[in-house]
Image 1 (cartoon, rainbow, N blue to C red):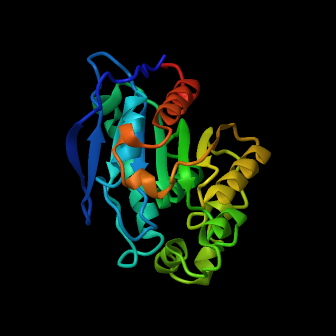
Image 2 (cartoon, helix red, strand yellow):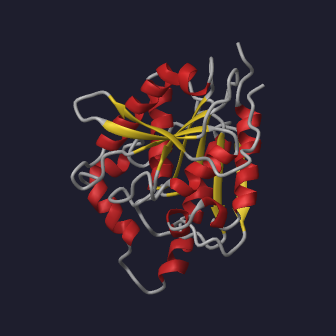
Image 3 (spheres, one colour):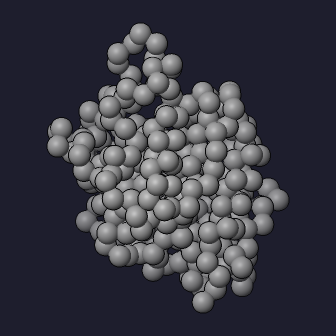
Length: 277
């Protein structure tokens, strides 16, 4: 069994790692593996509509994951518009491959590997999961998508509830700066919510809330995954969470529904992590 006991105190950053490559990236690691333990290892992508944010703004979900019993590596991925699709997705997959090679040191022998993200980071996590499936490496135990940003059409009822009569929003602007052109909106790695082939993806935890403007696209993706035979966990939290904005504005202990989110994360990690080989 993978140990996912909750931390008694808020986990602190144990180290910042620099990934090798032509454009080195930083990984901020949360949590510390006890001697002899084997913990889930999660590659985490922060939010920020593809154009902003960093490992500090992503600290809320990273800490919640660590408190749920995981070792969390939060990636400082390349941002748009300087780096448009597919740069961040390719960077994420490269980071996932590197973590897979380092998992024994970071999380224990044969530690199960997960991807996770909130808002635009949820998009990148879902895209990297698709890429890992298509490239047959590295193996994933699951994906965790929190208030994910999955639909560039920006026409869902939940988004209209948030915007009212406004026609412009930061999510539409983020998509415009992230995608290179209209054809990218048809690419599954750019828009996982519209991917045609979902079979073969790992078990998925999707969390959204009644007041989340990205709610409908998250629930639609969950339903499509179920239709493809993927085990989907999670549910709809009741207002008011302030998601996705509040996920980048507050420490983990102050995150709306932190206890519920932490419990769902812990249950998912326990349910999906494979036994030691």
